[in-house]
Image 1: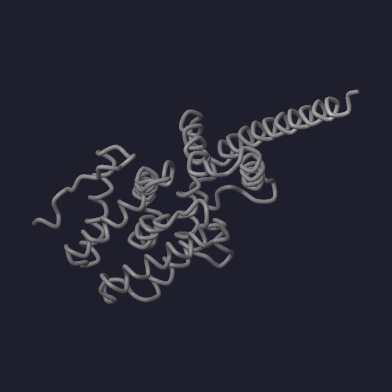
Image 2: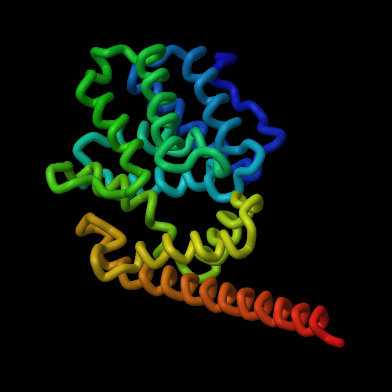
Length: 258
């Protein structure tokens, strides 16, 4: 049928193979939820165009695909795989690096999921409590903390999102560089200060990076990557401040010279 035919993404940053694999996962999910083909196609285009839009370098369909792969590998541990996949598809659909702080991106992404569920999903196929869980999970990606009363699916979903921190070194460095590209509007000082604070929090002994037993073995790798980037950024920040101070001192001497 025409609505199910592949469509090209001329601006995509993600490889065509990954885009196509992600598209197939989306249509399979929609089929299981009895979403009409035309609605599935329309929402796929929104998802694709959002994740592959201007300013996206890490939060692309490649990130979604990586999370879906982790979810597939952990399907034996998931109570509601459909809910986790829906949360994965929508959790970063809105990502405004300039104006989306303070949880705004997460709230707006959750709103887009709620709009999809209201418009396209039969409530018999996906009940209101399940919808509410997905909304909550998406909103919680602001902190990646599910709370003591959350179920295992929430913890696994958060760990899928944070798994990049435990990646091998080349993959991690590419991730860090792509996130920096998304925040190109932030000054060097501002970036190094803010990013190092995030990494210090991620690697803090006060809490773990991962919250599920399944990811416990990756904790050391995540902490090692986060700590290495944190110290590099702080060293660069210190050097930048020292250079600025030296320049200011030199300018002062020049101005005071007889």
